[in-house]
Image 1 (cartoon, rainbow, N blue to C red):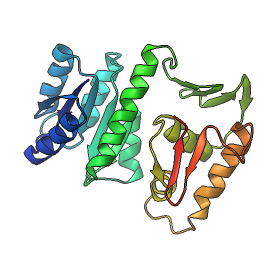
Image 2: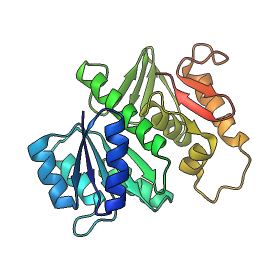
Image 3: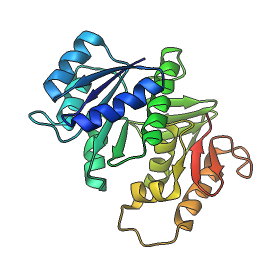
Length: 228
């Protein structure tokens, strides 16, 4: 698989190149948004990693330009800003994932592999545009609707957000802290059990047996993942 990174930081270029090559993929680098767009056109990468803050065209704008051209390649945004506003802008621009710097190299590798798997599944018909489909569960992103074995279920906005986040990254483990920050923001001061209750409510609505979940699985002492 061909992975393209657009980032003007040479240190980040070196780090991501090592991560990509160690995982057995091909690496390509761009220094700015214009170069990234040109390489996307000529080299057809399988996944794009975009730094948000680049000289000239920023990562949000590159993402918007690609989606306007109906480009379907997975896009990961990298940013030093982790607040919910910036993340919202990134996802609205069409990003598939958003990773805050500094990050653990293994975390980027896991997210790359999850998105590549998702892309491979889409080519074999398990996914259609704007909809995630897994073994009886369908998540319609644009209409914000969820169906389980043909039956529509009603989710609250926060429940839908959690399900969308997990289902978009099958097999990737999200810690409770990550989910809490994504749903309630970094200033959340409530109990960790808040996310446990939220996940429990989702399971009651989508799982055949909530005590033995098929879709949202618990990773003990860490968090949750969507069954891969």
